Structures are given as C-alpha cells and as structure tokens.
Image 1 (tube, rainbow, N blue to C red):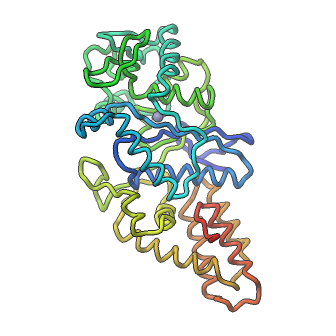
Image 2: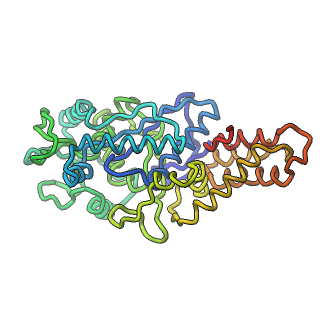
Image 3: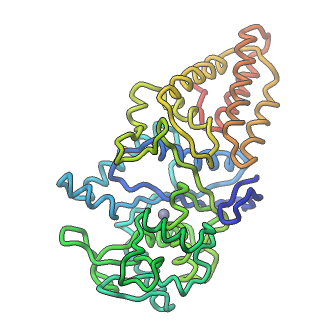
Length: 392
Ligand SMILES: [Zn+2]
C-alpha cells in the first residue's frame, strides 16, 4: 500500500506488520463536531477499513484534550465546570462519530486522566537536560534537539511565524529561544491545578500526546496523524519531546489531512460559519455526508458548498437502489478498482467513482438480468470497504 508521508514529503510504501498502531490527535471538547473534524477522522477511518480489509488489525488511539487554552476560557464564559463542558461535548462527538459509522478507537485517553504519564516524560526530559524553568514554567529547550523542524521542513523563520499564529509563545521573553515551548505551567486562579515535582499547574499543549501515545501504544508508532495545521508546532514538538525522552524514533509514518473551508472562506469558530455534523444529520442520511467527503482526496484543502449534500443524497439513493437490484455487470473489476484506488495513497475520489459507475451500470440493467444480484452483492462489498453500509 502506498501512502504519503509528511516527513519525507512524498508517497512511499506503507510497510507495516499484521498489527498497526495509529495515533490520531483528537478533539478539544468545547464545541460540536464540524465538517473539518468529520473530514479528518473519516480519512483515518478509511485507512483503518482498508487495512482491515487487507487483513491487518489496527489499534487506533484518539485522545481527548479536556484541559487546554480553548476549553478553559469557554467553560469560564459558560460559567460551568470545564469537565462538565467536556462531558457534554464528548457525548455529542461520540454521537456524531457513531452516526457517521466511524470505527471506535482502541483507546480514547483523556488529558486530565493522564497527568502522571505526562509528568513521567517531563521527568525524563529534565533528567536529560532538555528543559529549563522560569517563573514556575518548565520549557522544552529546542537547542538540545538539533533535528527540530525535521517533520515540517520549515525554516526557523517560518516556524516562528506559525508558532505565533497557532498557539505558541515565540514572543515570551522568558524563553531562551522563540521556538522553545511549554511543558508545564502554573494555572490561573480559577483553572484546574495538579501538584507535581515541576510545581503546581497544568500541562502545556503538546506533552499530552507524547504521554498518551506512549502509554497506549509504546515508544514508536506505525502512523501518527491529524489535520495539516498540527504539523507545526504540535507534531514537531511531540517529536522533540518523545525522541528526547526515549531516544528512539517516535513515528514511522506521518499522515496529515487537508483543511475544509466553507464557500470561499476559512471555516472557523470566530467567523461563525462552522458546518456541524449534528445539523446535517437532522435532515440527511449520515451516509450521504460520508459520500460527500469521499469526493475529496484526504490531502487536499477544499471548500464545502451547501448544495454538496444534495448531490450526495442523490448518489446515495442511486447506491441504495442498485444494492437491492438484480442484473448488472461483473462487479469484480469495480471492486478491484476500489481497492487499488485506496492502495494508491487513499484515492477516495477514484474509489467513489468506481462505486458510482458500478451502481449506474446495475441501475441501467435494472432487473433485466437473470442473476440473483451478483453485481449488487459486489456493490455492497465495495461500498463497505469505503464505509458506506448498504446491507440493510
Ligand atoms: Zn496531539
């Protein structure tokens, strides 16, 4: 199977054993699941399904960031406990993922339940001389990790710019280097705080994924993923922490998903133009959402248009009709095309095209054949591989 690796910047053989370990950065449960989330998590779901189809077992771990710089202000604004907010939004997220028929994770660790594991890694980093502390904040010292930047391939200037834009603190004068990042920090008066050897406080953004992936899957992961906006700083910082703490490679293969915009503008909370999965499923079959997303390659940035769901509704109707019909062509070449497309860097649009062509051919032959639904059975198999259940 061929898959693009972010670190190498090209499509490579995805060489894995019978059991595949996968870690996908999960949600911060402070708002509902939007199409960007669905796009990312269904891309990994597609990979999992094809790996299972090829005979692998997959252990996918997806964390929950239930304490960070997004959830705490939101809980403050709503005047509720941050864990109550997290519980509410996690329930919604699980409902949405279930509706979309995404494979459940092997483990779903929560940051607030993994503090000991984070402290253990910070201990190792302190012992290894990778940190310094100022004003109760423990920083990672990037000068001790010369390979910093190897995932993104960004220049130092680009990294500083992205750090400023994406939740880093490059202008914090207490830092020795603008790219140093926080491992542990004091909490504000109304924020949760844990007692640790590094002082009272709460974790920095990146440490949880190094800790939780290690606890659930061990030192080296077969594949690590998330949205492309996590390449820097989040994943770059995870590499620095994990490899400095364990002196072993952290990840064999990096897979990142593109961003979804909305009708020409960035989809963002601040612009108020998020398209929520729970809104779409009120009036549309969740399989149509999946079908719409399959029309885009996982690495592409693309735009959602309101009409997209109506097109997908019609395509789903065609698939459902064909899956219950008799007659039609030999389905094997179509099923083989679906598998081959997925093995070529998860080419979902090509897999979807093969599926729709088979359905169209069955539909055109509608009940004209004397077979007992061989083509329809093939269609159901092919649809199942891409996560569209036509068995009902
Ligand atoms: Zn992460």
